[in-house]
Length: 245
Ligand code: SAH
Image (cartoon, rainbow, N blue to C red):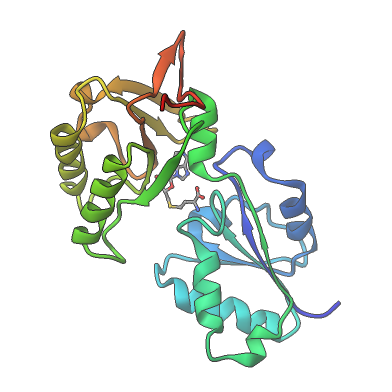
């Protein structure tokens, strides 16, 4: 077998939520590359070299993986959730730019269950109508762009799923997001805080916007803000499929 690079999603945490396709790619791998906590989810075995990195520099990790595949290894780059959602797949393709040798490799993207779908399923169906997804981290883009997109999404009355809502290095941006929501949405708008979904630390909280506080979110939380039609039914939250004309 020649070299191969699979860019795989490990899902939100529970082993049962990893696709059989990803399980098979890991079983056939010679090398697994990724951020430390994600590589730690892969069971060690003979013949498998684990390459955990704490380096947040995704491009150099992608180049290292491509170099291994070009040398004939069967490499799996792991991300949590889905590899195409704020994760390693884009970094690998960016690393392939200007490198026809790497572009010719056997590269495939293996999807995973992304955090917002796992969170939505736990809560009911808050993403059942049109929605959008925004990464609230301002590591790779300016806050002004985040604010512009937030305002557009609120104006379009879509449900919104927020990744990376809050970190210790930027504790104030999520407060600004809540402030903006309070200025533009009704106070009883539903906000779902889904933390560590499908792990033993899972915690779900659904509150109205007027009760939402910044400390309800951390880096392991996925936040879903409903549209104006999102509502409760029993212990569930859902957004109806139809909107009146
Ligand atoms: N590729 C990943 C997202 C990486 S960004 C995916 O598709 O899910 C990391 C962010 O994802 C976290 O800050 C958090 O907002 C969200 N996240 C990842 N796993 C989660 C989980 N099990 N529960 C809730 N949110 C999660």
